[in-house]
Length: 376
Ligand code: GUN
Image (cartoon, rainbow, N blue to C red; front, side, top):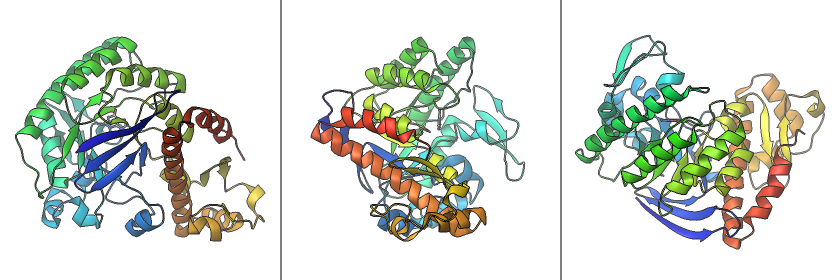
């Protein structure tokens, strides 16, 4: 993997860069649609490419390991071949999903024991196994196995937790560096900064993560219920420590406003289920603010979702029709709404990049932050 910087915004810490992987280039800042179980829910791979030009998607170790399982993924020749996607993929390590999704789990030095949310079966993820699984899935960028602390989290727990996450990281690196990719292309491992909402712990963690010298770095444990201002305060201290010549990935964030504010603090990569999950409930993100398409207000509004959008579905779908589809729980409603939201998120980060390059990012960001919070 390579990373190069094309521009720095003069009035903020925003940057425009390019990540180069074995499956192609990603221009940053970037948003990565979440494709948990080998599918970005309700969107076909052809639409991801041709309609919204997604440059990279995410997969989840936890889900893919449970289903379809490692045997099938290996026989398929890895996740790219299994799902028919030849652009970059990033996989999360399971270090978040085991806490948020699985039933009873025990966290020990060795790793995390959990019970499958699908059939109740018992499993153990260790840092080494999380690397082996991600070698088998075959993503371009893989994540370290960490503990994502909840919010709120007391100081003593958070302080102990980063120590364990750092010890786990050493084990991840050791395993990753002594194993080979399975499908003939390079993979890279990103470590994850933790430390809850405590500045001194975040500084300690960021310094340790930076000292590992990997090709890119991530920030975890945020957007877990803390106020946005606390999130930004943490991102700011961490970004100032993580090396500027490597990409910075903020995990699981966020709203369009969160994304713009964090770009301004020096974050390059984002993922979040918000545009996909909320689409299925009728929440649409637009250039003028947020719409709940289920509202009666749209019942007889036959204007297109967005006449000026270059997305076909935005031009030909009326608000009234999408409202009807979502109300009727029609699958097409989820498809159109998801495509619309992902198109918007990708438009937003592309605009951010253009504004960084033209030196207008800061002013544009402040203007957009005012507009994007509107409820229409
Ligand atoms: N996704 C969102 N936050 C996190 C985190 O802290 N760790 C991991 N592994 N994934 C995440």
